[in-house]
Every structure is written in C-alpha cells, then in structure tokens.
Length: 265
Length: 287
Image (cartoon, rainbow over all chains, first blue to last red; front, side):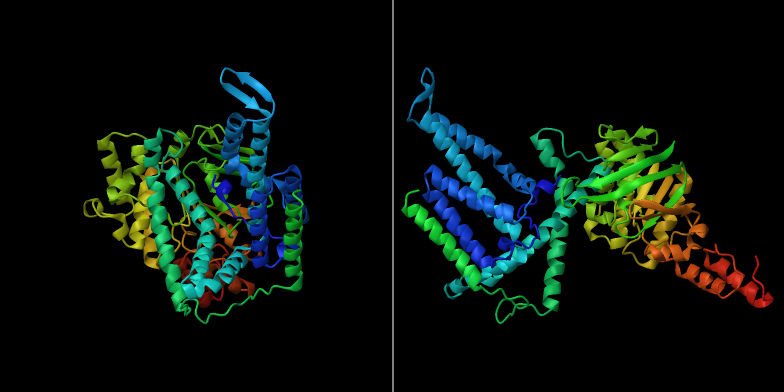
C-alpha cells in the first residue's frame, strides 16, 4: 500500500538523457519550466510536448510509471479544468442555463492549463526518474556552492537531502512492517471515522518515530566514527564533469526555445 | 484442523519491473500440535509463507486452508488472526504503549474482551514468557532490556491465545543465555496449550532439539522436509542452498566421512559425547 507513495523513484538506464550531466539536466528542466509558462499558443505547447515525448521515448521509461506519477494530480487537474470552463468567458457560447454559461474560450484555456500542469509534473519527474539520488544531490550542491560565501550551507543541505532520500524506502518498509505487526495483533487501520482512524495511527507512529530516532542516532555515530566533519575540504569519489556535449545540449535547447518564443510560435 | 497449502504461489508487485515470485507452488501440510522449524536463506520465501498463514498476504495462485478457514481475497480476517498469532522479526520494535500491561493488552482490546479477562490473560501471557507481572506491569516498555522487550512483545501475541503460534527469528540478536531461556519458555507454552508452533529461522542451531519437523525453503519452494536428524544428515544439500548445519552435526558428519560409524541424526551434545565415548572405548560406535 506504500508503493504508490514512492516519489522520485530512480529508473536506471543508459540513455542520452540518463547520461547528461546532472547540473545541466537541472538547467534544462529549469528552462523548460520557465518557457512552459511563457508559451501560450497551440504550437508552443505542441513543441514542448514533443520535447517531453522525445525524452520519454529515448530513455525507455515505462509509461505506467509516468502515469502513476500523475495520480496525486488528478484532483487538481479536474479542479483547474472545471474552474476555467465555468469562469473564463469569451468566444462562442456553448451552453447556457440561467446565469451559468460555458463558453469556448473557457474550455480551451481550461484544457491548456491542465495540459500545462501535466507537462510540468511529468517533465520534472523525468529528472528524478533518470538521475540517481546521489548524482542529484551532488548537482544541487554544485549549483548552490557559489552561494556559500553569503551563508548558504550547500554541502549540509545536500547531505541532508541524500540522507532523507536514502531513508525514504527504509522508513516505508519499516512502517509497513510495524503496520503488519499491529494488524497481526488485531489493529484496524482502515475503518472508523476520522478521529478513530487518527487514533488508530498511534500504534504505528510511536514505534516508527522511535525507530527513526534510533536510526538517526546510529547513523550520526557511524558517520562520526568515519571522521565525517562536514563539507570543508571533503573530496568526492565521483566527480561529475560538464562535457562539451552537455553544454551543447543546453545551448541547443535554450536556443530552440528562444527562437520559438521570438517567433511567437 | 491443520494448515494445508496446495500449489501456493505468491508474486510481489506483478506487472512491474520489480516483480518477484516469492513463493512457487508450495505444497505442505502442518498438523495440530506440531512444532515446525522453517529454515531457509534470506529471500527464500519463508517470511512470505508465514504471512499467508494469518492473511497478511493473500495467495496469487493456489489455495491455502488454515484451521479450516480458506485464505482468499475476501476472507474475514478477524477469526483468522485470532487463531493464528504471528510474531515478527524484532517484535520489540512494535511496542508503543506507556506501560507493559497496556501493550500486552493491545490485541485483546482490539477483539473487545471484558476488562477482567484482559487482565487475567495479560498476567498469564507475561508469566508464560518469564516476565513478572507485578514487577513489570507499570513500567514503560522502552526502559526494559532488549531481551525483556522481546518477551513483552511475544506476550502481546500469546495473550490472544492463538491455536497456531508463528515466530519469525525469535532469537535474533539475543545473547545465548536469553536465547535458551526464551526457547525453553516457548516450548513449555506449546506443551501446556498443545498449540501448533512454527519457528522461522535461518539457522536451526538452538531449536533443532525442540522441533518435530523441519521444512527447508529455497527460492520459493520447499526444498526438503523431515525430522531434524533426517534434514541435518543431508549436510551437502543444505550447504548447496546456502545453509549451514549446526556445528555439532558438522562434527558428526566429518567423523562419519572418515569412516567412523556414528548415527547421523545426533542433535544433542550429551548424545554425541556418549556415542563418541562408546566409539573411543570399543572402537565401534554403534548405538
């Protein structure tokens, strides 16, 4: 039952997009997201959709995985669509009942907004799907390190993220185990009203917190025992280098998007 | 009443890249009052198998009857979970109440027993695992020692008075003394109540002497079954699937390999000493 909650799952592969330098990948996604909000024509959307589709196809990601990532979005999508359909006016009137009317402009902008959200979430999930968590935090550290002089703890943030990501599956597993153990003692997590359900979470949450604290303690001790002293002077086993190919990809993508925007595609 | 599995199969995360077949057409029958040792390597499917016995997992294919109840998708879990008590690995991690008595009573409250009966059962369950009720009932479970915490957690399941008691690695991480003591208590409970006891382990060192039958699992199948003597005398086969035979059995097998005539099914240190002594004195070790 916790499987669906696994966000940011890495799907190993060896495609072009998998191999892109993670910092460049973050750059690409950032440009993508910004330009997605600048485009407001069909052709612009079509171009952006094609980019996403190209990455999905070439990275050989299973479609099911991507669709599952959209699941938490269903409600927001429906909400956006309905809101636009009823509130945006313009174009021809498609439906009229007393004061409520649906007009063509509303349907169009509703669909476009919803599609924009789908692209947004799908493309950002491509980042986590094709980049291992370690490479991702490395990239974030790299991108943040110029801000170190003004007091941004780049290394500490990256380390915290690495640890958090590392322990998500562990804690999910633990939660499932504790849940099963309490169910074996007759606990019921699924029925009752809201208050009863909240109360029934106590036998799950107390042991889970205790084990999380115990793990944190153990981890801190283990890190100290291996002379961890924070980021200063720490070297990396794997150094990511931005190659010419990576710069080229970034330039090509930024260029294409810029041209499309300039043409008001 | 018994546990009967026919072609029991379980597949984790079907239709995903992570799909794994944890149980592959398992057939078995466990009679009432039997003491079973279930051994197998990590990932051999033993934990998956026992989680079917109380309906935490449902068969993907095949059938399973436990104490007369068929375990399927729509099964009413309440009577099943009362009949089958499952103690997970490191059960002390499931403790959460403010005191020992309340924690042991958790399951009993869930099945809605009256107060007096709860108190009586809690007392019995705690004494069955060697915890003094009066001394411990008001203490926080988190200030106990590891061994005491484990006993309290096991008592929480025992208090439900199951007909079948399953323990997953009950002695993992305990010191030898506590280990022996805990198993002794479990053996007594089994004898007194006549329940079916299933102990899951990856090594059978300390329970070889107390089980009637051993089931060996490998890659989701039952690879071998029989009395402890029969199983351990197949040392080579066990080693092939990554299991170690107890040191004592290793010694006996090594001696037998040198042509010394000792019985292959010796499980007890005393027995071994007697047999080897006889061989030393008489040159012949026939019992």
